[in-house]
Each structure stands twice: as C-alpha cells, then as structure tokens.
Image (cartoon, rainbow, N blue to C red; front, side, top):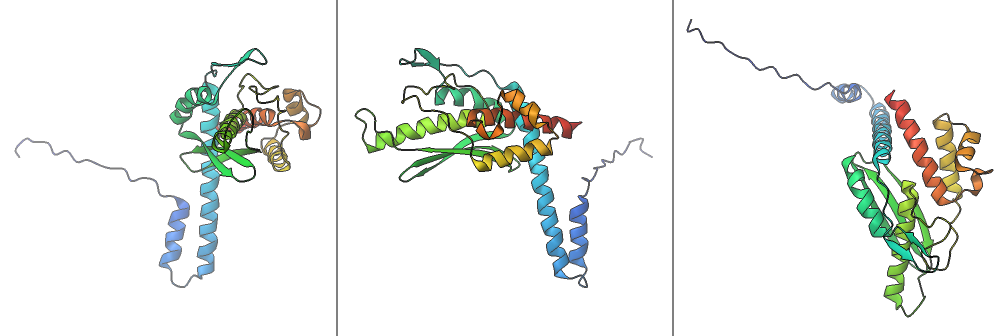
Length: 241
C-alpha cells in the first residue's frame, strides 16, 4: 500500500434513442423484411420533422418575446411620416433571431414578375416562409436593373415584416411607391391559418376579435404574420408545459 488514491472517471453514456435502437435491431436481423425497415425509417423521419417543428416553435416564440422595436429612420415625404426600411428591419431582427438559432433570408425569382420569398429557418431545419410578387419598378428614370433592384428591396422589406408580424410604420400605405394596398392572404395561407387555429385549440371568433375582423378570409399578410406569431407562441407554451 503506498497510500495513494486511485480516481476512476465514469462517463455516462448518452441515452439511446428508442427508435434508433429498434432500427438497429431490425438491421441485425436478416429474417425481418426490408419493408418493415422502410416503414420504420419513414416513421423516424416524421418523428424528426415533428421534433424540428417543436424546436422552431419554442425558438420563434422566445425570439418574438425579445424582439426590439424596429427604429423608423426613413421618411415618407409624400405622407409625411417615418417608416422602417429594410436595413432597419435587418439591424433590429437578426441579432435576436440569431440568439435563438433562427435566421431570416430571402429567395428571389426574376421573370415577367419579381417574386420574393422571406424565410425564417431554425438550426434544426424547420422553416416558415411567405411570398409576394410585383412588377419591375418603372418609376422615375430608373433603368431595368435599377427597377428590378427597387422592387426586390420593396418586397424583401414587405415580406420580412409580414413573416415576423412586426410593424413597419406604413401598414396602410407604402413608402412613396404609389400607395399600393396590402395584399390579402392567399388560399394556401388561409388553409395554414385554419390548421394552426385547430391544432392549437384556439377559438376562431377569438382570433377574429384579436385581429378586429369579421372574416379571416379577408385578412391581409401583415395581419396573417401577427396572428401566426401569436399562435406559434401559444403552441410553444403548451408544449413546454
């Protein structure tokens, strides 16, 4: 005996995913048909997608709870009011989104019309998106490239505020581009909203009261962004309980 004490480190093994363990057993058993493995892999894929969606909902609700007010640094000289530009939105939103594993980006498709899709994506892979399109801006003395860039900036700003359910300061009018009305939601968006209301156990009349409307078919994209953010927060709170 030399009086020394031996210290043995014990490392706890990470808990085994029951589904992965089952798939491993199937792979090691040559008597089981491959059709069963295919079904199990499909079930695992759906399980992972659901988990990813839950992670997104929790992160999105937390981010929106911490989201700062977007500063309105641009001036609409026609309407004599301040509004938040695309740069204002990015400066305000991206740090908070990033803190919770979220990102805000856009995809652009250019043809006869310019279509812009805003995408909020979580690190787990789940994402939500909203799209809008408009003709190339031909106002003033802009050339084709400048007109396309102007429209893209306008649509990025518009869809960015819509998907986050945030106010830009010009919900009734645009920033001097002709007082374009805010588009109503599409049929697909209404279907998604109805599904979210049902899945969260929400009352449709309460949702209409929240938006101050008589018909959910008639809400615009800004209102859609607001109510979807509210429902996502409700879902996340229920899942965390």
